[in-house]
Image 1 (cartoon, rainbow, N blue to C red):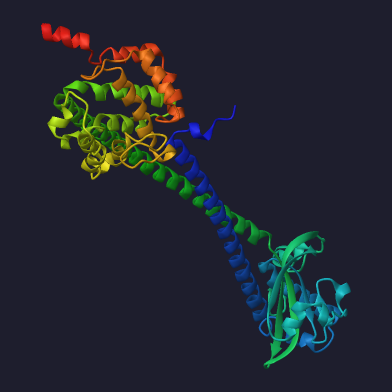
Image 2: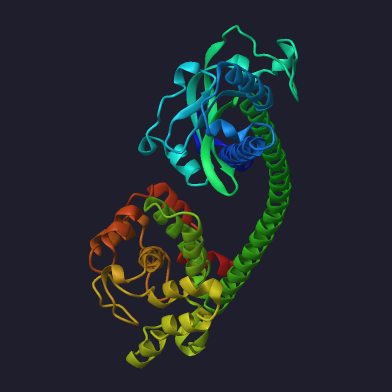
Length: 459
């Protein structure tokens, strides 16, 4: 089974990606370098060949061969001289031309006297115009002319010590550099010469250079891969260590925040004794409901903090109203209804609690838009506030108050269902009603009840 790339460790993914990039870079660099080296070697070989061939006319070769036909003896002597001097350049064939394109000398005697049309040869046109010209092509040539003639025959005495050309033909297809040069006398072009140089040795040396260069590039890429991978591994370990330390610090900070919020909630319970433990129970109801809605992680933490701080605005409500055992008057109720807005303003300036402030402000809104302080409806109410409203109402209904007794869990559940779509978000109600009754009863058992309060008072 093919492994999933996402299962690889970050180091493995980095190593593979870096390797692929370096391999691609090395291939492109090696190919480009090989091309540039090949072009440079070919250009330098062409220039050297042009210069070498041109330098022989007027110093070694007699330029008067362009003035009259050669006898057999003259042609044999010239062939010996030319092959001797050109063999050091691996020249396998040559031709000398008159300005009209007629061949006056060639290693192949059958070609002498033939005429090459100027329009059919760019090299001949360039040479007769005074410019050198080179191009690559393949020809069938006699390899014996590319060997030093002195090693194959007896010496010739006539001003130079030249050997005779081996008479054994060695025809082969040759990858050659065709080089044309003008032949000049007294500043006037009197003909042209062309040679075909066997490039086998040059190509062999070139391939050796290219392979060596490619090997160096590959080695450099491998060393760079090892170096960068090592840097990445060390950096990754350091980053992971720092991230773990930072994560631990964040967890500690969040724990401190949550304990601080819990302390504030406890302080509110002390001030409002009839809601003792209310925030804690609401948190538990909210968590059960939120999980039914698929809320988890950071969102669940926001809900928890919103539940703990939902009544923080009551610090601005006078004790005579907050602790009043009877029903509130209209004026007192108006004062009490300000606590969501006051609570949101108290914590709204704290970046850590910005989203929590939305729950605090809207925890008394209703699904049908008849709540307060903003009378917004439906999904305009933050989800956290909609969940809180159900949990808060259920805890209030299942807790004793001075002006009424607590409802049973079953009675309170039926009341929540009855208010589905008016006071409460239908989806939130469905999620709440999906919580096992046993879990709701376990939480509700800690709520303040008249019987327990009486027992405590008697004791």
